[in-house]
Length: 327
Length: 259
Ligand SMILES: Cc1cc2nc3c(=O)[nH]c(=O)nc-3n(C[C@H](O)[C@H](O)[C@H](O)COP(=O)(O)OP(=O)(O)OC[C@H]3O[C@@H](n4cnc5c(N)ncnc54)[C@H](O)[C@@H]3O)c2cc1C
Image (cartoon, rainbow over the protein chains, first blue to last red):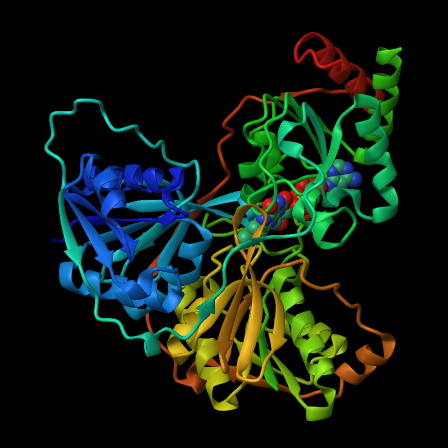
């Protein structure tokens, strides 16, 4: 084949947006390298997914199908995809950067003698792949130098997923089924059913205003400072992960990829750096305000208004000003 | 249970980001370093597992790749309670890709025959999130990632894995195994004065890439680094804290209309 192969992820009966973004990235890469672009979907029953994918402008769609692939396991998925890659020898393999891909793609790459370039945000000529370093404070340009296939995974939101063109003239992609050789003894981990964690008493997703506190607050003792601000505004109090990891606020108040996704009218981040895992949970906010002492903090890349300063001075002043304005 | 914990020394979070003259990494001349956060949780999980099975005996060995300065972070891990350490002394870490580093770790860990290998789920500097998974592949061991809790069972391990958006999953797997640990599963301990004293006596074995016989060119290189471009034009509200707060209230009132 020697083209670009996009591995589309299906979970809980659907294909998430990030997989369509991976398809878009694959098409961009295909255009850069003038190579045909195909896609693969892995599972025990993939017919309907394959049909959905085949409606996109792609060369081929592979249904990598086996009863042992009904539930995701790193062993099952890397064995199956390794066999497909051996059979088709793609030049590049593109994945969505999901928890599942993080779990098996690095092992698959190593089996091929390669290294996955993970969490890619842009593709340049070469090709060169951009990914974030130092939690978003720096970008790095990576180039594959090996002789084997290059493997990349793309960050959520980095590539625009095009809706399939209605009445597009291109013929649908050809769908082929690829049955890997798998034995149950090769699958060493036994996954359980997903479950929700803890209590769900706060629904941040419907909040109009959110004050979100990060590690800049330094100590649990200082939390009343931001609680007072939230109260003065009439906002919900939320937090970044380290605050919840420390047990300073319950996990149900965590915003981000492993917490809640919020889209308030006002998101006010206090002492939050703006790591990608946090940003994915709040970038739908209508207005983003950030208070941070570091003018280069990545949160300022997505903020509408910013105050560069010490939160221990700015927050009390803001609380007072809001109280005065509300009178 | 013999547990290996692979740890990494990373720049302090508050470190100033200045690009070096070659444009290949940040200027390290005035940097402070610390133990990578999720590695601290991996170490804590290992120490707690050992303490829980105190009767059966057990050992926690930390392993780290990096230059001499990494010795400081290793001592801190020993002060928290690790029994001994392996330091793979390596001055060209920046030239090695994830597979190269994992090869070093795998070669150092293999003769130890551990029951369990833990790493943090990703480093705060490069953020690759791959090292543990590749080590598992190289050693032919089963693995699970994003783990918050580890329990020993009759046949192996039962672990709690984080999924996206507040979901979790239980996974059972046999030992020996590799787990990458997510932050937040435990409360981190501090080193005690006694711990710090004892750490000085503990064994730190130094190895090198040459002594491990690991030598393979990278298949991926970091060509250059750059500061990110802003996506939005942020309006920075200047002045003293009071002035900036007053300006923001105006914006919230008249532009955002939430007051
Ligand atoms: C798989 C995975 C999932 C994750 N899921 C999430 C998630 O759901 N949600 C989430 O938030 N994170 C998540 N993270 C963690 C994420 O990568 C970051 O580590 C985290 O968001 C950082 O939180 P923070 O911004 O509060 O802390 P830091 O990054 O430490 O930032 C603190 C900020 O406070 C500023 N500051 C310090 N002192 C002051 C002061 N006096 N005044 C003003 N500013 C000050 C600093 O300049 C800095 O910018 C996840 C990570 C991984 C790997």
